[in-house]
Amino acid sequence: MKTWFITGASRGFGARIAQLALERGDNVVATARNVVPIKENLGDRPNLLAAALDVANEQQARDAARQAVERFGSIDVLLNNAGFGLIGAVEEATAEEIERLYRTNVFGLLTVTRAVLPQMRAQRSGRVLNISSIGGYRAGAGFGVYCSTKFAVEGLSEALHAELAPLGIHVTVIEPGYFRTDFLDSSSLSVSGNRIADYDSTAGAVREHASAMNHNQPGDPEKFARQLVAFADVADPPVRVPFGSDTVAAIEAKHASDAETIRKWRQVSLSTDY
Image (cartoon, helix red, strand yellow):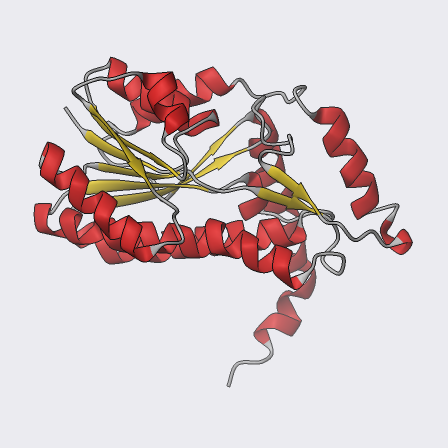
């Protein structure tokens, strides 16, 4: 039996993963700003603790971690799932939009992780699963600011992987592609209020594409949720795992592009050593 600590558990991936973990007998600390949907979706169970948590609030994060340990005695899996998207060209995004995105996607993840790690270090065991995106591996027009938050998650996860492995704590960054969830709905995806005509053929086209793709994404969220719950039992988890055929294709294309860049510019790159 494991104890899960899940952020963003009121809907989407977080809610389904929480339900699957509960059904297999694990304990779940399901957190969200508003716990009412959690209680409505998951009911009243002895192995469920619904905790109010704004991931950007350090005191709430510490309180939720303390409640988890008091109730279940440990925290074995931290799933940093809370986050949202922003669509629009980098220049179109306002300072307020950028700060709001980073406050949840990056600083919120850091706040919760730092609140939970003391317990995991004391246990000398645990798993941290950070939800990133294919956008954390390669960026694209229209999603530049969002991708930058996920690039930050990737970098933090790699460093945490190295720092925590000797302490018996595994860290993995999860890279889903497009799954048929509400991510492209207004509830999860903000659209920059500014629109600059010069970007109509790039970021502007992505705005239209995202609207057309909504609820037509290739990934099955149920299969993803089941795979992720099973992944929590893997003995030697890797530092990153892609999910979805679109993610695998994008990573392979980036590898090929990077290899060609190194081939073409190798002599210039090597020429700067002493």
